[in-house]
Length: 227
Length: 356
Image 1 (cartoon, each protein chain N blue to C red):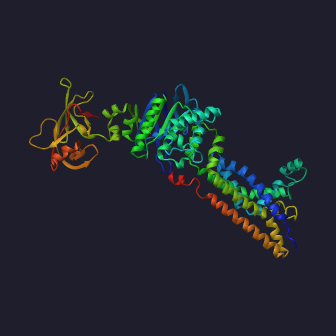
Image 2: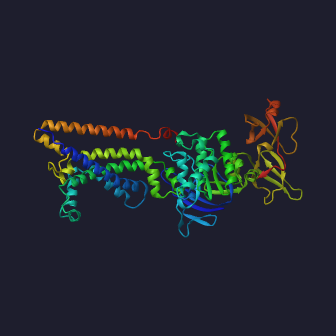
Image 3: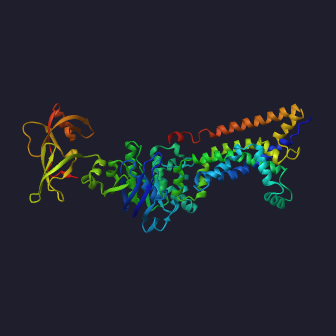
C-alpha cells in the first residue's frame, strides 16, 4: 500500500501556522506578564498555564463548546467565512495553538525577565519609546531563548492528538494529522505506515530539540561571564 | 542647575530593612559628588532623578522644567527627562557595535546629521578605530568612554554617573578622571557623580554632598568638608581623623583659648563659641597635624604621652597607632631614626584642634 503523505503535510502546515500565531499572541502576552504590574496578573498567568495541566480531551471539550456552531464565536466565524470552524483543518490549527502557546508564553516570559534591566533602563534613558525598546533591545537580547521556545512550540503543535481529535475530528484527507494517522494505522493493523510515520516524527522532534539546545547555549560568548 | 527635593519611603521587605530617603540639594554646572557609604541612598537618588523610581513626595527641577512634582502628580517618563546616565556596569547594548550604541541615542535626528554627530563623538572619545566592535571586544577603558559618549551624545541637560570608577585599576581611574575633567570643560551642565571614594571627591568634585542613611549631612567644596566636617558622623565617614572623647574644662574668649581634658591630659585649644564648660565633645585632629617624637624628659604644654602599638607602612608615610586610639603620620625617614622607641610624646597643635 502506498504511503499517504497527506497527514504529514497537514501537520506541517498546521504546526507552522499555529507557531506563527502563538508567537504573535504569546510574545505580547509574555511581555505584558514580564513587565507590567496590574490586578489579576496572577489570574491571567494561571489561565495561560491551564492548558498545560488540563487533560487534552477536557481542553478539547471546552473549545468545542466555545467554537461550536451554536456558540457566539462559532456563529461569527460561520457568518464571516460561510462555513463552521469545527471539524476543519483550521480547527486543528486552533487545537495546536492552545496546545503550544502556554509553553511559549512561559519560556518567553522567562527570556524577557532574564534580560538585564539596566539595558532597558539605558534604552529609556536614551529616549527610546516602549515599542522601540521592545524591538531593538529586549527582543534581540532574548532572541535565542525566544527562538528556542518557538522551536519547542512547533514540536508541540506537530504532536497534538487529543485536542485535535475533539474539535477537528479524524477525517482522512481533511483533518487527519500525523498523530491521528498513526493511531489509525495501528488500529487497522497497518504496521508499516505506523512505523514510517513514527520514525519521521521522531527524527523531526530530535532535530528540533537539537536546534533548541544550541540556541539556549550562551549568546555573546564572553559577555555573560564578564557581567 | 538641578534642584532635587526627594522623599521616598520603603517598607521593610523580606530581605531588606525599612529605608527612607529624604534629600534636598541643588547642583550647578560642574561636578557635584554624591558621597556616602553603601546603602546611603546615592544610587536611589540618581534613579529618582532619571525617572526610574517614582518618589513618594518632593519636586525635581532641572533648569526651569519640572521633572517630578509629588503634589501635582507630575512624573515625566525617563524618555522625556534629557538626563544622561552612565550605569555602573556601563549597560552598553551587547548586540550592537559601538557606533550603533551611539546611534541608538540620537535616532530621532536626520541621518546625515546623526552620522556627523556620532563620528564627532567617536573621535572626541578616541573610539574611532574600535567603532565597529561590540562591547565584549572592548577594554574596560573603552567601554567606560563609550558609555560616557553615549550618555552625552543626545546633548543632555544633566549627566548622572553611578560609581564610574568602581572596579577600575589605578591607570584606568586616572584616564577616567581626565575624561571627566574634559567633559566638565566641554559641556556646561551639572554632573552628578556617585562615589564612596573620598580621594575621588578631591580629584573631581567642585562640590560635594555627603549622604548618610538617606539624609544629606553636609554640603560644600571637598576641601572645606575635609577641613571642617560638620559633625562626628561626617568625620567618621571620611575616616581621616583622630576622633577622641574630651571634656571642656575652661573657655576664655578674651585670650581666644580653651582648655580640654583628653584621657588624663590637659590640652589647650582655640576658643570654641557656643560651647559650655563641662560639655563632652569629640576632639577631631588630622593624623598629619600631630607632631610625634620618642619620649625624653617631661611633657610640655599640649603634649600627651602614648605607647606605640603598631606601625603601618603607607605609601607616603608611616602610620603610627598609639594607645588611647591615637593615630599619627610620620615621614618614613623620621620613623627610621626613632625605630625601637616604645614611649612617645604626641603634641597637639593649638590652632588645629577642632571639636565636634
